[in-house]
Each structure stands twice: as structure tokens, then as C-alpha cells.
Amino acid sequence: MRLKEWAEREGVHHQTAYKWVCEGTMPVPVRRTGKGGRTILVDVPDEAGPVFSLSVGLYARVSSSDQKDDLVRQMDRLKAWALSGGFEVVRVESGVGSGMDGDRDEW
Image 1: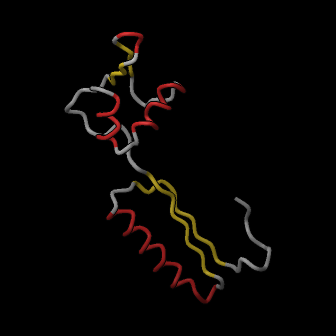
Image 2: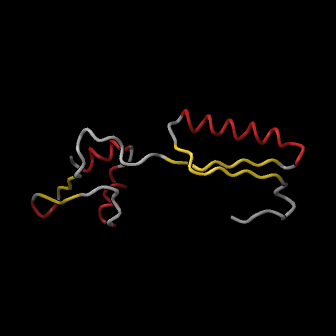
Image 3: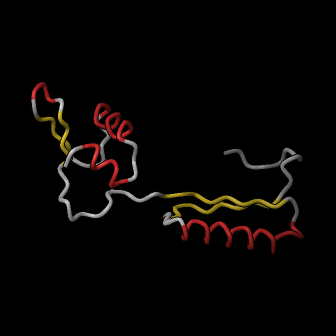
């Protein structure tokens, strides 16, 4: 399969896929063919599904402990959004505390 076709199937811009080939970071085997190796073929059977999934991390925060119920609702809404978009949730973080007090975890 040509690189551009593979990129379209995976939902990746073809220039991003080409960059991955040049950097050697493609998630699947590729080979160059044709005159001067200008044609790039991806070695993936046509019946194979997507090589990778779109994954997300979710983060919600409220400013005080009396809003913990709001925090649960926020996280439920974020999870529903991720599920409806076909995303894989790989990390969930939440916090209670004001962003103004300076007493918060650093990323």
C-alpha cells in the first residue's frame, strides 16, 4: 500500500507519515521502491485494522473540596466525550484546589 493511502486510512496527514519515514519512527515496516526510491510502500495487509488508536489523557479540577461532586460530574462528561469520539483513555487525573494559591502539583 502506498504511504499516502496508509496515512488516509490511519487518519494521519500524509506529510506527517512521510516525516515519520524520514525519521525512522513509522509504526509499521516501509520500503522504498521505484526510481531513486521515491515510492514508499507500507507493508501492511489491506485487511488489517488501524495500527494505532487515538489515545487521550483526561484532567479535571475544582477549586474547593465542597465541589467534589462537580469533579465527579466533570470526569464523567470527559469520559463520555472520549468514548463518543472513539478515543482510548490512557490516563485520568483530577485535582481539588485553587489555581491561585500556589500550592499545587507541578506537571
